[in-house]
Amino acid sequence: MKCVVFGGGGFIGSTICDRLLKDGHEVRVFERPRVPPYRQFDANEPVEWLTGDLLSTYDVSSAIRGADVVLHLVSTTLPKSSNDDPIYDVSSNLVATLQMLNLMREQGIPKIVFISSGGTVYGRPQYLPIDESHPTEPMVSYGITKLAIEKYLLMYQALYRIKAIILRVANPYGERQRIETAQGAVGVFLRRALQGESIEVWGDGSIERDFLHVSDVADAFAKAVMYSGPESVFNVSSGVGTSINELVAVIERVLGRKVQRVTKPGRAFDVPVSVLSNEAARRELGWQPCIHLDEGIARTASWMVANT
Image (tube, rainbow, N blue to C red; front, side, top):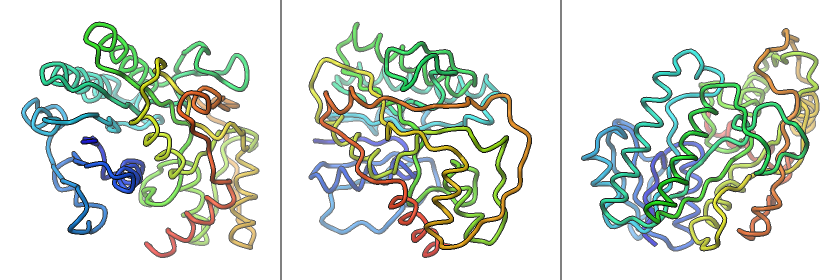
């Protein structure tokens, strides 16, 4: 299949692109200007690297031409900072996606796979584990915008027969996670631990999250590209809750030494527990997580050491 991957040069996107290439697909990567390829591609790999502006209808129209499926992985904001400028969040993410959908409709592109946020769209859990039928009450603009995009995807599916697959990914971590920014607890904690710095723990460390290795995320996207069933919304998660205290303990176990902790006051926007059910993805996509947290953190640590 001809796959266009918006955001294919990033942490998650690059892993997905490598998986798609491994599966024999043709891949066209769309990235921001001045973003270089994340690796040197072999001459026989069917990959094309494009740069442009997601808000440019010309750039996006050119990128999707002839595609069998679009994978939309772009977000211009982060959960913790999205409330600082929700207008930018909406204009740069929601508006851009609507323009993309209109162009897909014009060109007859039949399918889109969108990365949503299992960590923010649900808000405070009313029951655990959280399944796809759980109420959606996001507490940050990032989650609200993701949810709005989901609704438009489903609208375009109903009206214009553009098959939409929405993957609500839990808390991804792994190789190529951006070291220089606060992109996820695992990445931040590991970077500081490897540099001999203390780890900041917000609250008492009992907050639980659902951590998933990026290779398992890529596997879910590979399955979604080939999926032709009736469902559209899937949680992509480990299905296991890990507290911040447990996460630090795993890091200590992997590194073979103690890590200094600094306790900070709890943050009001932090949901106490977020664990997602992945039963629908197992049933419909034939997907399941394979990388245990210890193995995943060991792999991530090795990559960080080699790339620092």
